[in-house]
Length: 112
Image (cartoon, rainbow, N blue to C red; front, side, top):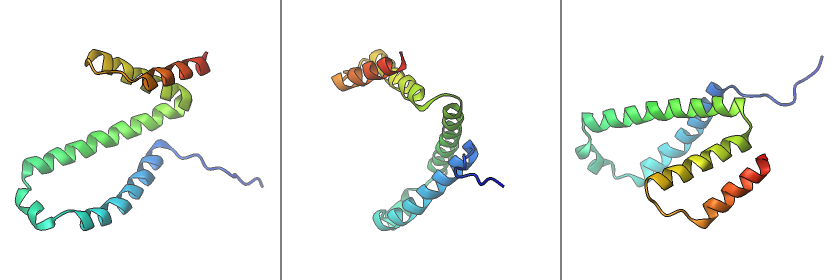
């Protein structure tokens, strides 16, 4: 019987394990660094709803990214993300750093 050395995670499993790791780090750090009595007075239902909605959208974005990376190579994914950032910066009239252009050219050369 052949043993599989590598186990390939499904997108939902990747999302679960990365979220679990972030909770393990964030809860102790939040307890140490956040002033809880001050935070209790500033909490509202509107803020809680915004945090909850942000978490749901982040979850869907992460699952979508993992599924996309399952279908395409990581280099292609990185190239598309870099191109998206350059286009976004161009349309929002931000300054584009020369390193962004160099990385985009290197990735384009690798994909050709």
